[in-house]
Image (cartoon, rainbow, N blue to C red; front, side, top):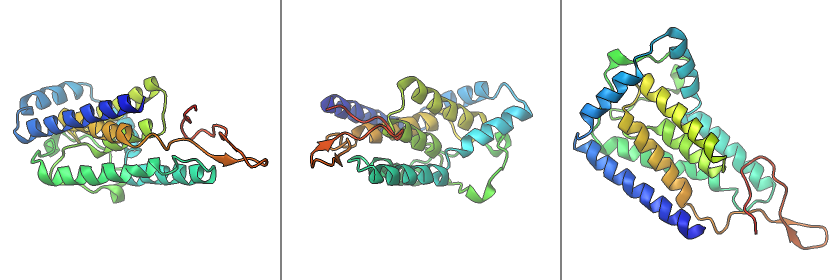
Length: 217
């Protein structure tokens, strides 16, 4: 299983690099605009507000707080994988590095539909690839081992809101998904799993406390 996860993560990150090259060359510009125009066809004030509320959940401050809380709870439960949520810092670092090097400007400001709910959390960058919101959310659903169907739905909704609000191009959100998933799937798996000392001195698996599924021995 570890080998299959490693291969999957490697393939995902290779796909991310190839996508970044295409974006840097401007090869996806026309497709990006066509898809964005299609996603923006519905337009209602309640959609703008709803999408803005959803997208706020992907902010660095929100995801970082959740990651820290889960890590602390896992550490208190003596789980070996307590550190895993904190690897979101690697996602954030790579995202920022890419936004400094891949010259893809964000969608035109006149297309923006965002409702500024928390302006103090906004930190716009000159370039937009990849989507940090999607990358962070994709990482967390994999790191916490959410069910596949739920994980796909959560990431897809976040991706659609970012495009609908014209905060990102479609290639940005695809890049965010590849980055977040690739890093989460590629993290070391051998050490995942809790160890709790029993009263008799032996070790046993701790109960599932809702912080991500624990691997079976």
